[in-house]
Image 1 (cartoon, rainbow, N blue to C red):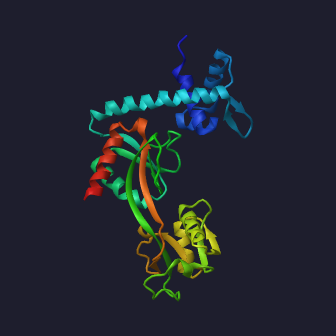
Image 2 (image 1 turned 90 degrees about the vertical axis):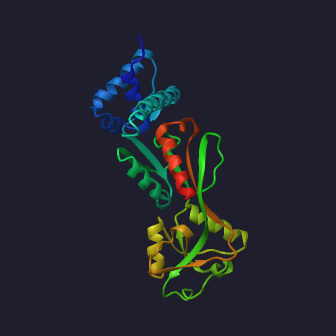
Image 3 (image 1 turned 30 degrees about the horizontal axis):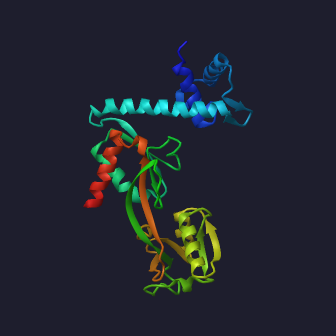
Length: 284
């Protein structure tokens, strides 16, 4: 008996989604139909590919190994689809983006969509290595043989304050000014926060937290109403009239943006076209 493609497709969808229900929605099937396909696969080979309970579906050791194979299988299916789509000059397809700072890549996405209106785009986070995204935008440099990388930009760290803050009339500050100053901090794990903490620690200075918020917009709002001093990449300050940016003259930290894709996927026409378009934009 040849292994059933339908059963592998059902297994792969459950493994990707961690749920029979979500897998059924993705495949436009009923949950019992998906469960039946996975059960038939397990029964025929006498294996168990998932541990199941009421709240959790997770892969067994056999399931993990099979998932590695189905990822390769369905990657090849995508490659076959893209090869055939090439002959229609990118008139259709999907480009999935995993981004940390969408503002930096959106101009390229806009240009790409204008030139190829049949291509759908989808912004997601941290899905590249899970084969759930085609391209990722990282807020740092990265060296990994599995990745093809393209450096986009590097911008200095900038402090910003409300327009009625005592510093608003200054042209710049230094790191020592931030010592024990009430700060609006981004959430733990934020590249912005980590960079500030490292820079202040290296200078032997203390960070005083006024408030911790999640996301750039929340940080901007907290600073605008006078809750403290914020820091941001100079490229992300924008033109909000409620706040004023202040260069930090002795800060060495820069925020780097890097566009990456899996090297194994880098020859796909849709990816090479997008990367070429970004390179064109950088050269302008």
